[in-house]
Image 1 (cartoon, one colour):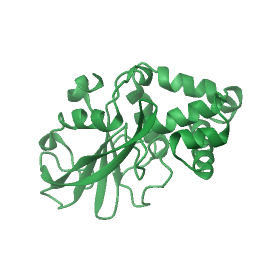
Image 2 (image 1 turned 90 degrees about the horizontal axis):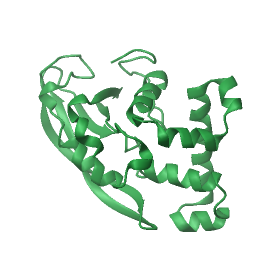
Image 3 (image 1 turned 30 degrees about the horizontal axis):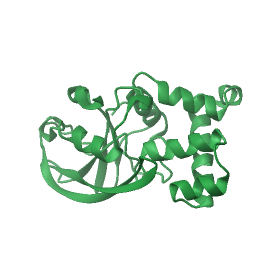
Image 4 (image 1 turned 180 degrees about the horizontal axis):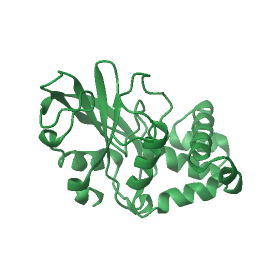
Length: 219
């Protein structure tokens, strides 16, 4: 299971004015080898989370974080040929030094989206392979045409931001997607993309401007 390297969690931090997300990049395997749903994977990954070992992403204090609360979030996956929806509990921790609270997300979940990373990449993959007409593709996944095209545009935009202008022109979207799902440890890409852009891959809503960290800097 990909979560076996729980003690080697890589952390990215997205800060808000009063709360933040702690991003755990834990998919230490190829995406094409993952058979579990994002919701089930998240449940197993968060079990290895130890808040007392965290550094507060807002004030930088170490050893001051404790479990504080949780909230429910719905995750949409695509399993056995059908879209599925499952709720997960997102743990929150609180820093005893500054009082800020932080939610825990792993890289199989995209901030501000109910659709999982696996769901969106599968939709984009079937679109790029021309397996269905747009109408049939949207019916198959239960999405709208506008949603599909937004995802494809965002995928192409993030591809360009990661590769740079020249390399982006040389690599097709389909070849880039095949590369992504075949990276030995997807977490190496997800962490690198965050450090470069301060966004998670396929995250459309920008994080608040008053982020504690800047692109290119390790939190």
